[in-house]
Every structure is written in C-alpha cells, then in structure tokens.
Length: 342
Image 1 (tube, helix red, strand yellow):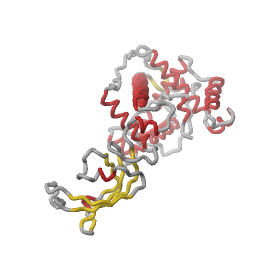
Image 2 (cartoon, rainbow, N blue to C red):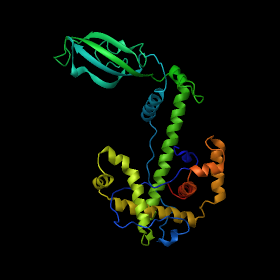
Image 3 (cartoon, rainbow, N blue to C red):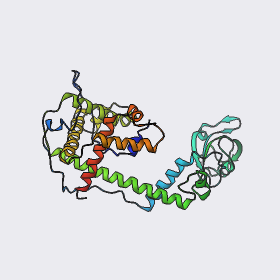
Image 4 (cartoon, rainbow, N blue to C red):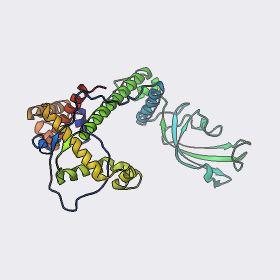
C-alpha cells in the first residue's frame, strides 16, 4: 500500500545530512518512546519564541505558468486517441534515409516535437498533424540549401516516424478530456493548479520552519550517551533517505555524504538527537497520542476508504506504532509553528 496514512497525518520528520560508519558488533535493538526519552536527554534548548528566517517560495506568474504546463503535460499522458494539432506535443521515434541509407545524424531516439514550434525543418512538424499514438507515417522533405549542416543542405530525406504518444496543449477541450469532476475547462484548471501549488509551497515552508527549529533546539540541548541500537537504526534511516540520490550518481550513500563533507555516523547522530527533541517536546507539552486517539484516526481512514473492512483489518496491515509516531510528530510540528516567530 502506498503510504496513504500521510493523508491523515503529515509527519514532521526532520531530514538531515548523511553518511556511513558502523559498529562491527551487532548493536542491541532500541526503540525510542515517550517513556524512555528522558533517559537520553539531560536538558533541552529553548523552542518557544524562537525567530526563524525561512524563505517562502514566491508565487510569481512565471512559476505558476511553468508549474501549470508541467502538471498538465503529466496528466495529459492519460488522454487516449488525441489527434495531434498545432501546439500539441508528439512523442516520436524516427529515422531519416538518404538514397536508401540511414543517416545517423538525423535519426533519433524518442523525442518530443511541439507542432508549430519550428524546431525541425519545414514540413516535418506539419506532417505530424492528424496523427494519434501508434501511427506510423512516412514522408520526404528537402533540407534548405542554406542548412547549417553542409552535409545535409539541399538534400532530400525520407523520414520514417513512429508516433509514441500525443500530449495535447492545455485548452478547454483537453481539460474536459481528463474527465475530472473538479474542473471542466482551462480557467477552472488553472485555478485548481494555482491553489494546489499554494498548498504545496505553504506546506514546504512550514516543514522548513519546523526543521530549522528542531535543528537549532538539538544544537542547544544536552544529551547522554546514545544507545548503539539507536545510532544503528538512525543510520538505516539515513541510508534509506539518501539511497536514491546516491544511486543517481552511481556512488554509495557513504561516498555521497563524503562529497557533502559529512558522514553517515555524523548524520545518524544528528538525526537521533533531533528525534529525541521531538519526543521530549511531546512529553513536556502533553502531546503524546493515546490508544483512543489512534483508534479514532485509524477509524476515520477505514470509514473514508474502502481498503479495509474494519479497524482490526487496518491494524493487521499497518503498524500501530508507526501511526502513533506520525501523529505525535504532526502534533509537535503544529505546536512548534504556533510558538515560533516567523
């Protein structure tokens, strides 16, 4: 199941740096709870009345336009049998042949062609008008005599094109083709996307404030020796957090963190300390989550979705303690936002 618990609770998990290290001895497992948090934190830094300077994303016309176009292009991939016209994007595979021999310099892998943008020689984009996904078209065009590549200038070329997909431009018709009951025309769609973007940027800003507060509080707190099991589980978290990013650069998480002038052990310890701060604030401010509250939240999920027949089925498939931690973290986040000068 995709973690739809996030629809009920937004975990204010603090994302910190990363790297590798480890204890050769298998550490004893450790679980942080509101009952044992005071065993590992001597004093906590000030967290009420802090002034935090976190920049909000500016909602410029350019940002809104770019986001709207990108968001629609992604959604529009689901529209089937759209007939390509000017302004639409056609995804194609093609080859170009001169005198019976394929010319590799003009043959390409899948690429996007916006009809009417004039990024190809005259006639190429026009030949795609009227096509739909799955079509195969062939046509012959002549390169201009003054074409930049002298080897192609003035030559006839036979193109063989496979249409992979047609992505319509944003319009009343294409919005209607999405089949949504939230918006039915371009104007309504633009309002929807703008509101969505504002919600995203506001959530991102609040998460940034919470992260900055937790990090500062941890830096001004005094901790006792942390259990090896706590460090080990924190290292696992950091490994998972940065695993995809490191993989993109074809390096290990440890190597990636070294490039960022940090290490897995450093980041794991910082993450563990920040978790202690979150739990300590929850205890000090009475933000723990009771079983009754947890059952209410889980029950709301069961009632709203058709995924589970009852509460027992929900808990059989989802960690009760994970939901408790996420709910408590959300409470702590809300509290921090309420007592922070922003």
